[in-house]
Image (cartoon, rainbow, N blue to C red; front, side):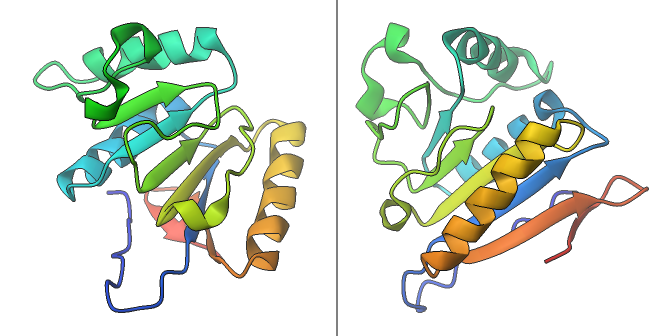
Length: 162
C-alpha cells in the first residue's frame, strides 16, 4: 500500500512536496498507483517527464498497466488538454488546472505555490538523480513547503523517513 497523506482543507495552503526514492520498484510500477490515488480523491494531475519519448512510454503505460482498468489521461497529441484528468507533458504547463504535479526524470520544480501537492519520483540507483532530489528538497524547504521523504521498506511498503 502506498501512503498518501490527507490534505487538511482548513490549514493554510502550504504546498506539500513528496519525494519518492525509487529503489525496489521502478517508476513504471509506482507512478500509476500514485496517479490512481490522486484521481480517487477527485484531483487532477500533470505529469512532467524529461523527454517526448518518456511521455510516449508513460502514455502507453497508463492505458495498459492493469488489465481490468486504465487511467484516463492525455497528451498534447490528444488535444483538449483542459478536459484531461491527467495531462502528460515535458513542459512547465498546467492546462488542466491540476492541483497535483508529478515530476519524473529530474523535471525541475515548478512555481511551488501553484499546486497543493508536488510529487518527485527519483531513481535511487542514479547518483545524479539523487543529487538533484537533494537540491529540490533544499529548495522546497527554503520556500516553506512541507517536504516529506518516502522510501520503501524491505516488505515493499512506503515509509516516511523525513
